[in-house]
Image (cartoon, rainbow, N blue to C red; front, side, top):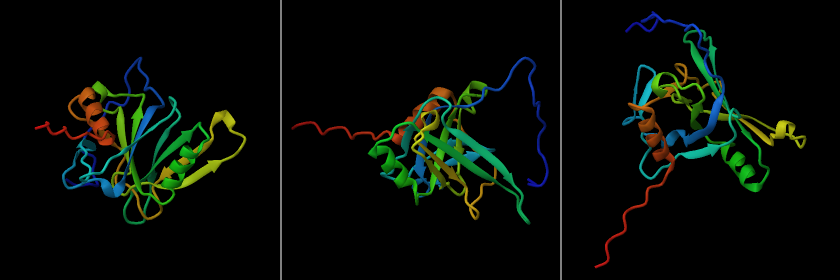
Length: 199
């Protein structure tokens, strides 16, 4: 396919319906290098299988409704155009666990799956993956004792100057919304091995 040509049309509005703005309560974070890209499946902007390397887990970040912000911005290049991805996490609890979480992000390169309030057809765009191509790094960490709107920490994960994305955030969808959410939970839930029967 010629990447410099459009390949489909689009009906860009539907009478009487508006897109639902904002995000849900969940973000799933994983280390960029923990993803097994060779066995994961991405096609036409949709990830239908995300596989982590053996013994690796993702991590669930939970906050309040609409507290997370996802962004994708077109980045015009001299030779190749790309996108900057960003995910802003807002934390409303000031304790050592929160501080340790922020500190762990300082030098990490991560991929984020963000839960949207707009779900698309049958839930096919409820979850989107930011940083799939190159990962996201901590670019801002705003902290002030004023706690405006009760926000304690504001951590922004973003593409850096030399690591951009080739497209908008991938949709994460596996056949149905229920199957997608089961697979998503499997990324951050450690499954215990069955106990050996006593003999």
